[in-house]
Image 1 (cartoon, helix red, strand yellow):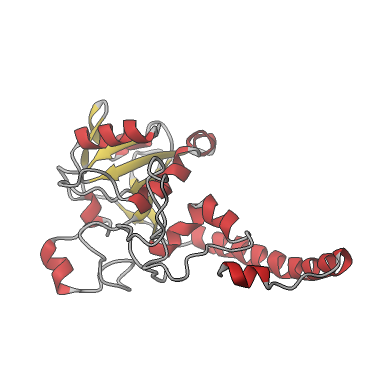
Image 2: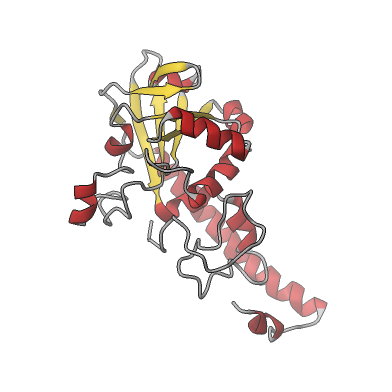
Length: 255
């Protein structure tokens, strides 16, 4: 939506405004109920047991997947795109991380541990985390197949082959690194289960910025950009803002 379109927008009396928005509220409530029902059905999806051993490099040394739970029964792992030879993390994934970092205590209160996992070496992750001011625990999976096994990292040959192996086999990977969020459960015996994963636009569910923009007069205002997230920067790089520069995240994709 461009500025001219906003200026040409219909303007009505306060009573007409209340009537139109009151009528629209019924549709929003319907969507809320449908979303609640979808969430219930999501929780009923089958799980699969994690049998493979994964060892990560973390701020306190080596850690297994089970140790990432840190006393909780549920674990959310965000796969932040940060390849082994990259100098910094993906701007789009960092945008996601900004939102997740503020949720740590709230998630802990509901028995969910939150960690980030990337393939870059730990020293690179630590330096970038310090720069960004994030507080979450961040682990390197450089020594194991975790990111590959959970569908976010691919080999050069897999990318070149264009096989639909990303987002539950619906699309080819965008590159060697791709974004995703994996959820796990640990039962009282210590058994681990992979319960859910989300990729691509499915990750918008955790982005409060988009929730606000979707209700702002200009919306996301991404029309005409080379990709929907081309405006996103690391939060310390917004001055000056140069709209239209290509982000390392990828074009619009369906969930």
